[in-house]
Image (cartoon, rainbow, N blue to C red; front, side):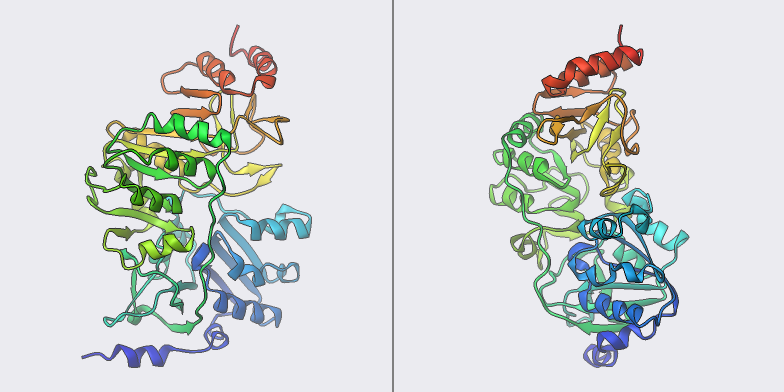
Length: 437
C-alpha cells in the first residue's frame, strides 16, 4: 500500500526551494482571492527581485494581499500582468505607475477561462493554496475550483501551499498528491470579504427583485451590496436552490433562515454548487467538509448549457452603466478596466434558456452623490453585455423587462428608471439619436 505520508515528506520543501525550478521565461498562474498562496508568491517575488527571472507572464484572477509582493514598478521589465478580473492590488499598481498600461488585461468569459489557460495560453507553473492532505492522499482546492482544478492538471509544474484554514470542499475540487510537484506549508487566516451594509436604495432594489423570485427558484448571486440585499429579502422564500459562480456569505444567512434546501433543482439536487467562494469565516466554516456543498470548474458551473438544465434560474448581478439601447458596461470606469467580465453574461444567457428563468441587472440610478447618471446615451466603456442580452433592469426607481421591447420602447423604459434630475437630458439625447419622436 502506498504511504502517502512518505510521499508528502519527500515533496515538502521551503518556498524558496520550490520556486528554484521555475525557468527564467515562464507563464505562471495562481489561485484567486483566498487561494492566493502567499509564501510561494513571496518567494517568486524574491527571485524576480534578484533578477533571476527574465520574462515572467502572470495569468490570474483577483490578486489579493498574498500576491502584493509581486506588484512592484521595479519588476515591470521582467514581469507582465494579465488578469481576467482586476482587484484593488492591480488598481494600486496602476495608480502608482500613473498609467493603466502596466496591467495587460485579458478579456474572456469565465466559463471559457479554463480552456483559455490550457489550449491557448499553456501554463508552465500553477500555484495555489490547498487544505491539508487527507488519509487517501487528496488535497482540496477549497475556495477556488474555477480555473484552478483544470490548470493544476495541465501545467508543467504544480506547487501547492498547505494551509489548515483552507476548507475542504467536495465535487471536482480534489487534487491527489501524485499530481503535485512540490509542497510548502503556511498556516494563516484566509482573506475575508465582508458584506457591506445595505443602503436604503439597496433595500428597495432587493425587495423589488425578491418579489419576482418564485419559491423553488435556483439562484445565482453576483458580488456587492445589491445582491446581498436581495438575499436578505428572500429569507421567507421556500425551497430555493443555489447554482452560482461565486458563493458569498449571504447564502449562509438564507440557509439559516430555512429558505434553501435545493430539492427543486433538476441537476445537483439537494446540493449547493459553486465554482469560487469568497466571504467571511462563517462562510468558510459552512462549506468545510459539508456534503451538501460541492464545487466544480467554471467551464461546467458557468456553461449556459449546464445552467439552463435547472428550471426557474434567477441570475442577479450589478453593472456600471447601461445605455439607451440596452448595452451594458460592467467593468470599465474612468476610461480603463476596473474589474472584469466574470460570469455575468454566462448566467444571463443560461437563465434565459432555463424554463421560467429570469435575469436581473440591478444598480443605483446615479453615482458620485447624484452627479452622474448610470443610464447614459452612450457607454463610456466597453460593451460587457450586448443589447440583446439584458432581461430585467432594476434601479431604486423601478423595474423594466427589455426583452421584446423595440429601440424606442427600451429608451423610454430606461429613462423612467433614471434619477429624475437626468431624465430631461436623456429624453433630449434619445430624440437626437432618433430613438423617440
